Amino acid sequence: MQKETKYIGNYKILDIIGKGGMANIYTAIHIPLKRVVVIKEMIRAVGSESRKRFQQEALLGALLNHKNIVPIYDYFNIGSASYLVMQYIEGLNLAQVIEDAAPLHPKIAALIAREICCALTYAHQNSVIHRDVKPTNILIATHGQVRVSDFGVAKGSDSPDLTSTGTVIGTPYYMSPEQAAGDRLTVQSDIYSLGIVLYEMVTGKKPFSGHDSQTITAKVSRGKYTSPFTLDPHHSIRLSRIINKAMKKNVKRRYHTAVQMLEDLEKFLGWKKCALSEHILTSLITSVEQKRAITTVIKKPQKKKRKTRRINTLWLYILFFVAVGTLILYLLRQIIKG
Image (cartoon, rainbow, N blue to C red; front, side, top):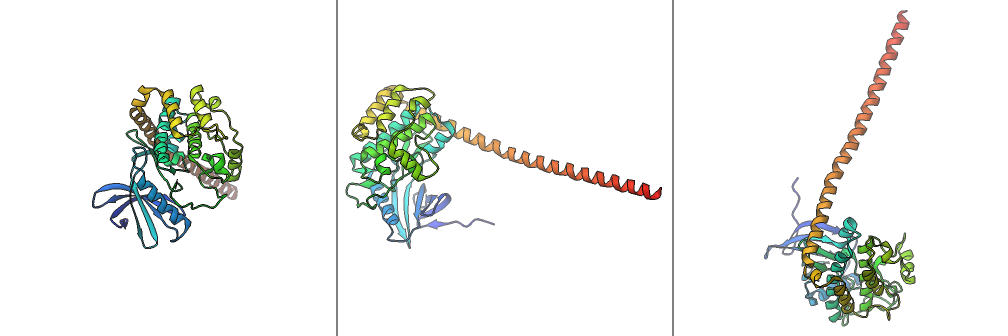
């Protein structure tokens, strides 16, 4: 049976790549321009806080025009649904890279962090705080460009505050202590979250973990974690210092701006590494994609082999019982004849 083609306005839907209680995410083709895009569909009721935040994401995204930020193309409503259209980035998100390649070499991790820092510097200079910096919101294109996406909980200086005092927003694993406490956030909150992302890249582990959100946020609030120097297999003292400064619980001892963190990252990398950034990250993405493809190919035959073994074992049992049954019948006939 042929699959029905779905259209949303001037966009032909290609595939659904994300589905949740609040939004669906599709890849689509913008028919007039023949351009592949990503569409986020808000499916909550009109007038809700989520809908307002969704519209705010579109407005803030349209304001930000930077090579390290995923651009917003369009925003529109159809009936009770709202749609946000953004650039399609071919590649992987940082969470996939961490899953398959972490711990990353300190220089590679620093290159990725540098690009994120550039995006945050630009956003902060335009009075926008992201408030949800995490690996799934960081995309690395096949050609090595790093893009920050999803300003869904971002806050601009002129934007209305859509959260009540004491309300915790963001992702627990990547929250700053002030964010976990529901306090007012600043640009330093984004810096703290970036420090956590950098920590995870070089160690392969999250600094704060737990079985539920409350446990994680309690650990974040205490601000105590294992030193990245201990867990980093390359034991980079210089990069550990950058991570620790970004993750200072006391905001006065933390980097005051993303520019300060950016300067330290560039000193650590050196101009040659910075110049080769896209080339190095292209090799990383190619390597991870090949590894993911090989893993997918290998896993399928293994499942078939297990199934075949089970079937073969079952047939052996059947043949055994048939043979035993035949022997018993033969012996009974011999006894009756005798």
